[in-house]
Length: 324
Image (cartoon, rainbow, N blue to C red; front, side, top):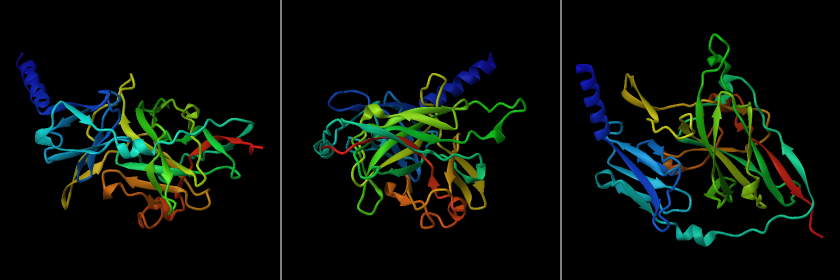
């Protein structure tokens, strides 16, 4: 009985220091799914599919304000002392004004495939963290009208983590794909108006995950488009996002340091692609600035120094014949 009472008191203390917050559209009152919540100083989290996230005073004792952002909405900044259970986000009039309705592509077409590149070398892989996003540029084929039908997402399931029975340890990780326009300098810029897509990778997933995006009608502009992949975190068996701490605290000679939690699966980078087509950013650092993945991003990166400086995302494209 004493143990049960102690456990009850501990649970009560934890719950009392955690606040569940729901993000809603200020006009429609619908949930704002998978919004990004930045706590500053390199920390952050995401709302789930119902627009809910947890602010834990115990988990983040040094947080005094937060910033919420999501495509199509104005950024919301609020002091943690003023946080209430429901926060309303205002649609961005600038983005609403920028919406362009594209005519549906019609006519004869042929499918062309950009092969995804995968390998099983653990040391030539990107370790996904919620603070990082990886963008790969896709261009029109032969200058013709081109639509993205399927994205091919290469993953490494870490055979080294297999149990004695030869089976991989179970996991379930949610990723998000978002699309970005191309800036004048070739970098990703303002997020396009195509909706983001979430998907889940498990230990049962093939080494190349096929993500069907045909219904989104993604037409590649003349100067190209970026598809970016970002890990959101582990999920429950029913697919709901687990609200967990996104970094670990490690004791070093310089004191306690926060290290971002890495998630499975790994993302294989390749040295088989000519040129530079991969950009990365840390969304809780450096004002979300995109950087080309080369030595200017990190001169000590083993991936870059070994020539593995591109993520081999592939695609199936529908390439339309010129109009008469």
